[in-house]
Image 1: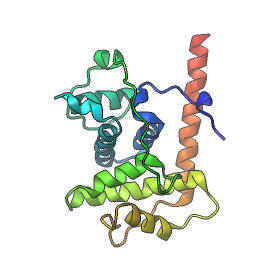
Image 2: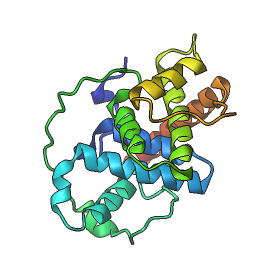
Image 3: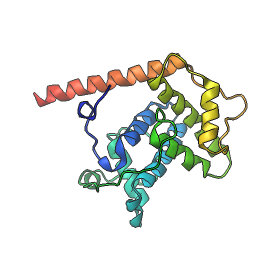
Length: 205
């Protein structure tokens, strides 16, 4: 079991650790266009979990600043705004209330369920289909972190439809990434994170 005290400290606590994990996953997407589409979904989720930020007229610009800060400014996407690094790093987060809404499937997490709702609310079209496919891959990745012994792609597709109230259905011919490919990607990401921590420790010395 992994405890919060053993995890890397969040730069902005307003959005929670699930959003941080979504950003880490976004970094692993090879295609820039898909990566940008996923970043836009993450922005919507960030606005959902921190609704007070919508009181600002420029809240989407602020969200993009925060997204880049949480990604250590290493997220290569088409950002609609110029990121103000100095202003972002002087940001002081507000305390956010806990959501009392029940999570239907805990192994997917609240952020992924929020993402499904955000995409399901979009009009039908190529962008929604692309994001639906990316969500399905993310669901399988989360499922593998919970249980690597029995992974049922059909079950994941059924749960995607259930969580979206039937609005998100995978296109004909869609194929999930193989379990081994996802496991290898997660292992590589963990290795990079461990190497980064080692370098930080060396710098402190």
